[in-house]
Image (cartoon, rainbow, N blue to C red; front, top):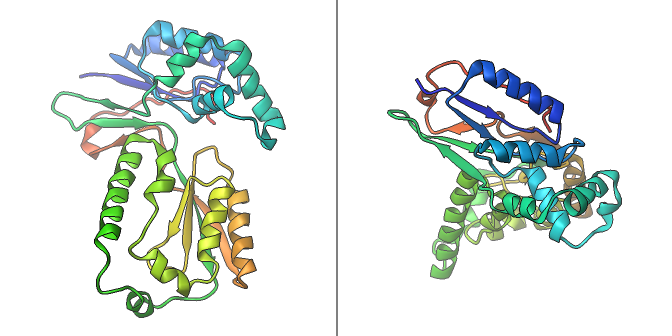
Length: 283
């Protein structure tokens, strides 16, 4: 039976990585995968990255790899003055080589583990969180249906089909940045927005506050905003509440993690034996 080890969130913690390596020498798995966040937060990002690269383990692109690339190529903003971003900027500019940066750029957002006779397992780093804003009034299903037209322009139908394909591809690949565009809609949100004062501005405010994307939940009146695993929920929730308040609507907000764990399997039968979970500090 093939034995697979998956570790993630090394975060530049070399002593923790070395402890995991010693444990793996005892476990002796057939394959080892690194599910993102090799670098950042800890003081030995360069050393950890060198060790992982030397071992030849397949690596998945994590959000902290993304932070490093943003600092390397992005235009500094006001939030870059925080201690967190200053440390990432120093890592990107001073510690990692051009070859290291190229390695990070080339990392895939997911990897598929294929095992003989079993469904494939897809590794994706992190998990999304949802922030819900719930206005203090109901919208009846009848009213929500009645505002929809009996026919829609062909161009709008084509638009939504394309966004549906983008949504599936983004979730399957872990390339969540495209979700903002995948949530664009022309078939129901524009018509139902009149039933929920402040909805459009609240969705925009969520994205401006750092959400990956926002959309109407079902027929409303609630709206949802998705944020990455390390994203801050409270600024998004506050922005949504304030946007609704400007439309004289009171809205309650709550945040929930959509999924947990470090991998998703297309079928529960893909796991045929208990798995050991060996990680360093998690983000």
